[in-house]
Image (tube, rainbow over all chains, first blue to last red; front, side, top):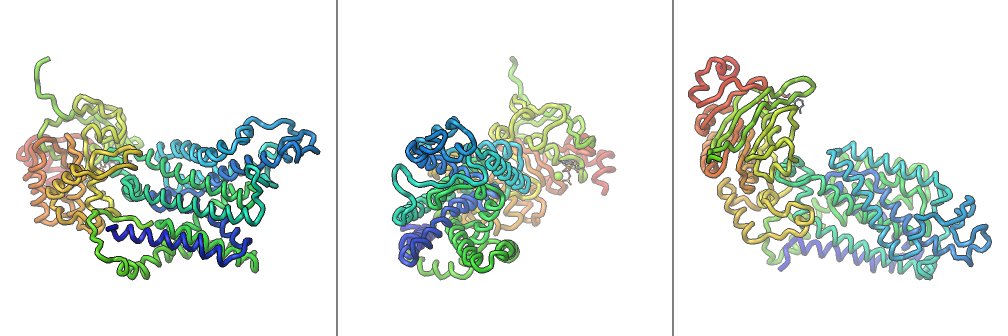
Length: 371
Length: 248
Ligand SMILES: Nc1ncnc2c1ncn2[C@@H]1O[C@H](COP(=O)(O)OP(=O)(O)OP(=O)(O)O)[C@@H](O)[C@H]1O
Ligand SMILES: [Mg+2]
């Protein structure tokens, strides 16, 4: 017999899967479903924030960096696919992306070349964010930089990366980003049919990431992270190299954010520096806070709800949306620090427990973390 | 080489200053195997700082700390722990979000690297050891409770248990009975008597009754220096000690 917590996890995941795979596709037209698909790509970032911020106390205000890097890896691949000799025969240098040609660049820069390969690009969209996270993490955590200082530094890096991209018009498309993306290995990503497929692929990947994070949180490593969040010195003086654990979870969250970014590029059809900088990074944290920084599924729902609200609001009152979101964040921090997940925990969970109780006896010695 | 009884811990000319303020000043002392040593002294004497220096939390300005022939001042904190030095903090430091069992499990010396921790599995040996320790620290029927729900005294015991499970050769306790009830103090004294069999213990304590019960030898610290050292009887009657500490 599975423990109560495991049965709950199965229930939560099934409900989420049913909503995303059945209810929403049946109830929404292709356009709206694609919007949901876009929101879900942010959820890859927010579930990583649950592991980093909620579990481990590492607040990164720069997750847009990793989302953006993943997105750019995918965009570079797609752009090369769209820049065939045939399609670019009117350029002064055919065969290179159009924005390079406009900026008088006459040969494909070296760092673009590997992105001809799909498998390289798929690996790069996870590995490049993860490697950068390891570098940032090693520089910060080994020097015991944490808390607010870490958050500010991640902001600074996000800002630097945006400036870097904007300044490199010729090499990576500058402020316009990389646009006019068409096919993935010959498969047109702009059709409604493709959007459905991409939506489902996104959901399946998100569920896979949720399962992976569930495994991590339930492992001893997950317990060490929570121990570290509350009593870092106690963990350090129990023989652990605390910095390595932080680097690991930060890099894992970065890799997931990279996957989200790559999917975003596929679903939206372009990538630009607006998704890299400080503003999107902070918004991701708000989604996570609203959903509940200690709940993986809570963070997914939070992401969907805030973005849905944004879309509905900003259609009618674009100017007050920013204020509404700021107000929402302050309200959550003040009155509901556990986010929507804590509402569930307080009001609904007791009933769910009663229904699921059955004869499952718990002898695990463990405070299981809900998914 | 003659066979001689080397001290377990040997501190020589240890000093540390914080912005010119000498918290520990040219300190030297030795700790034998199987010895319970208590450090006493007024607030701000530098007692906690001495423990911080030994476990690597604070870096010494000068001096050396030899432990079983190894120089601790050059090791990383986790290497000092792995070498066999366990340290309890002045304020109880347990993982409130985890159960007593999980608290002890994290302290069990295995699965300490990232990947070992990720794929760590409980085995019978570990579970048995956790049960054994939980009996010693009077928490054997509290294993499934969250540490946040323990009483202050129980948290102190739990933290001692978290050190014991690592089986350190040197155990350092910073005010282990602070905030305990009288009966809890008695049990803690028994606990310490029981656990010293195979190790040395360095204790900081203000409770003189408790010190008298457990100490083999007492060192009195004042303004970062040792002002008296010896048996409880000797220290108690030392006029310098009476003046700066016991007289109050
Ligand atoms: N990291 C630090 N930076 C600056 N000053 C420090 C630091 N650690 C300790 N001190 C100072 O060193 C002195 C000794 O402090 P310590 O905590 O060792 O005293 P103590 O003997 O443990 O006192 P108590 O009985 O109150 O616990 C104090 O004046 C304290 O303010
Ligand atoms: Mg102290």
